[in-house]
Image (cartoon, rainbow, N blue to C red):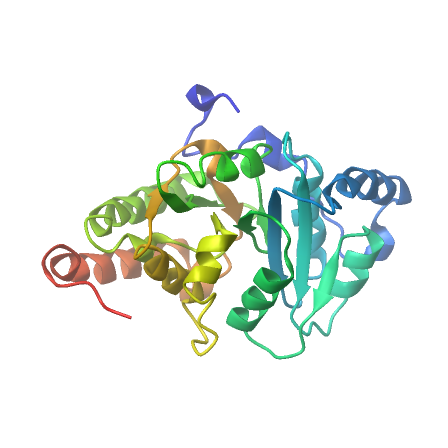
Amino acid sequence: MNEARYSRFTTPAWLKSHLYEFNSIEEIPQSLIDSLKNKLSKFHSEEPEVSVVMPVWNEGMNLFKTLSTFAEQQTSKKVELLIVNNNSTDNTQQIIDLLGVKNIFVEEQGISNARQAGLDTSKGLYILNADGDSFYPPKWIETMSDKLGKDGLVLNYGRHSFIPPEGSSRFVLGCYEILAETVFNVRNRNRQYLNVLGFNFAFLKSAALQVGGFNTARKKWSDGWMAMSLMDIGKISLIRSYEARVWTSPRRLMADGSLAKAFRRRAKKELSNLYEYIFKTPIKK
């Protein structure tokens, strides 16, 4: 990706080809299924350097789009792609089987349990964490795994952007992201672990095992907890490259009813926390 041509207020060209409008498996052309399955077969390495672990729960057609972006990944590394089906009850497993992706089924509900099962099952030296409702740029695997293990780096993470809903523009979303990332930069002073999000971070498997893996006692924030634990034994770092920027739906953002309301809520919340981020002691495990 030519970063000089990237705009915070537009949707990148690579993303548009994965925004299918299929509502069911039956609508997907067999030729597309065959093409994606063939491309994804490169992620069946038995001796991988990299394991991409993707917990999913009832993602259905969202997962099809996510896997479409992985089919276009450009990497020189040996990779396994492992989907952790966390007791889905929709057609998620059917999508997984249709595209021939390696997977395990975890009955016990909860993202922490799913992530730990993925960590235990994966074979790679580097674990890249993804989600089944997001879109990954073509060099995401290569970018996220490139510097792990060098100069004491045990974990890195990337940023994310939101795909505008139909009929809306990227402008408000772009402004929202700029605000959020400004706050992230402040939190980087002593609470960088708060910036690590589960769908876009990577770590050394050996380091994760050293700190005891994911904290399955926590129903939420298992990603930040892992980052906080790993800071005790090495460095964590933000990758600023747009090749590490993941795109996702604004559905959680839109829970407030509109982008404007979401913007105001986030601004009020984070501005009220600035003093705590800068001056108060970080939380301890």
